Length: 211
Image 1 (cartoon, rainbow, N blue to C red):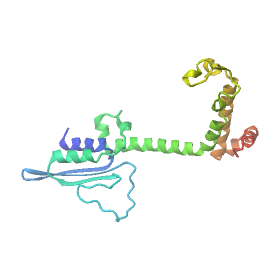
Image 2: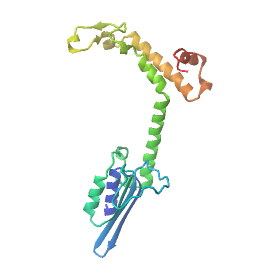
Image 3: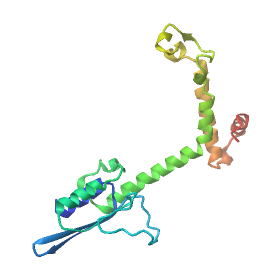
Image 4: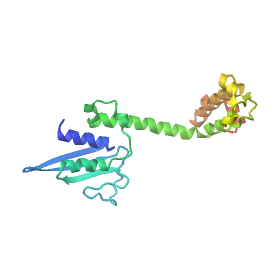
């Protein structure tokens, strides 16, 4: 591994995974190290109102910029000092040569970001039905949920639901069945797939005030 490869790996480990540029300039027996890198989600909006001075970063650490550092140990320390909270565990399964390969690394991170963005969007879209399902959970009203309880251990501060223990509570089973039906129907409705929303599904959502 070359010195440049080692610096690059260190920059990636610090959370700066995009547009990595490392220059090592030789001046006689002296060397000058310069590093520039961005966090993966950073987008350059083209404005010039924020200027990065030598050996400084944005306060939110979107960009790492270290210019003309004459000491390799100091450079390493500065990279470590400016590490971000981002976790790069999604690269852990890659061999070293793929981690340092810009195209491979950025493609892995791009795919992961697409998945995470899709998950966040789905959580936001399904939030109304998920909150409603939690609100009508019969276990939320325990021990006043008409379940079968053993109060012999209330000295430890909890009620023991024997139905839950034996997994035979009809209230819970009915709730799970209703939850599945509500989420299945609401997903069609929320994603504008009304062509496949069956009359019974539309009726179910209407009865529960979800549309």
